[in-house]
Length: 323
Image (cartoon, rainbow, N blue to C red; front, side):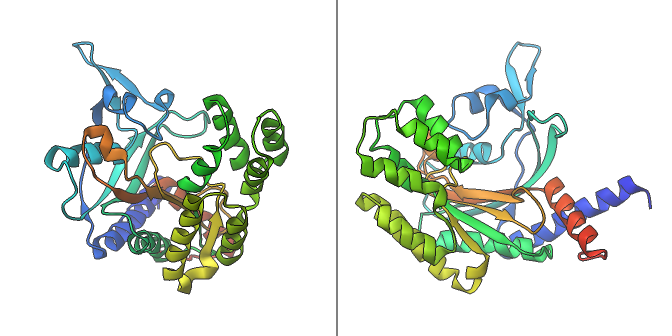
């Protein structure tokens, strides 16, 4: 068979498998426009870097962008009909997204599949969403599945007690994400603040591992009731996923995608593949950008990455593992 045709077939198999799983959970497929006004993304708090957007100017001079994100236009569209969430909404999508990467080997156009679950925040709902992410990866027959779980409130509450500039916060985020203790210590040494708080921040990169162990250590450095509440919330989520405890990892350093996220964060990994194949979290405040109260949680995965990960797994086993 022609290699290009084989790739298309694999893409469709992955998409069909994911779509079937989403549908069984009551999610309805929707579409968003390929072109959106640049203002939609430039004026909204977003995880999309404006420099990554593919911009197009129409004959009248108005600037449009090729779809760089799906969550934002779905939230905006729902805000047109609901200023406040009166009932749950379950949507899923399979769309092309367009972003310019700093890596020249990365394609601008990628196929993304994901869910947007508009609902009130609760450990039950968040656990259900993480379980759906786990089931989606299991449907694709991946080996060694891991879900890393973090929460935006823990880090934000901790740094609220430090007199940091925006530049210092960004640098601290990057250092924590890279687990660079030396850089974190050097930055904090210039900050005039309580040593106990600074020592607690130094511990964040090490708050990684099995849920029971990490949550116990997190309680020891939590300095406010809000931080304790965040830990209790994650405990509740993990309790409902106790049958999958071996596949869960807590990571309080999971803070790289905090722009419009406002609660639990998670990302999925599979064996022998160096980057996440699935990423998600809760974004309860995104609707406020459009004058609406539309709390939600969701996740997305790139089909290209899933196909590469499956091929990698198949190559290591030397046999077909998924059809």
